[in-house]
Image 1 (cartoon, rainbow, N blue to C red):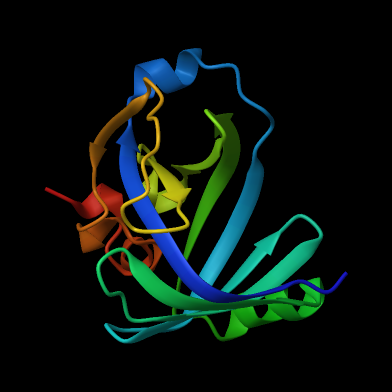
Image 2: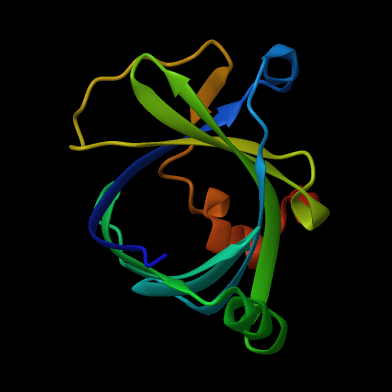
Length: 161
């Protein structure tokens, strides 16, 4: 199966209320292992492996909550080898996709060095798009770069004061 995505990613991030999240009936999640080959202010190159699929993703610098994104499937064996031998940093998380009021919320429950952190993301068609927030959503962290996956891979949540 060939998968690719090219375009602009418009994404907002929020923290999740742990108690309300635990009470929520949710679908099964997907465990992601992802590592970074390059990550700076202008670009990110990431490898992600989940179950029987792997991706390479290239992201440009952000302007507001928008940035260019290109994502392609790669063979799983290649993804695993790249993660093990070439990634300079990595994270692990379980992602849940929750449909709420016609939008898909991607909720990442982090493990390893980021254990205890739960972040929800919603991808939008335009920056000023209106959407309803579930009751388990807390404050927005879209502008706080500490919550990017690339940042969490080098400055994990467990080390925050």
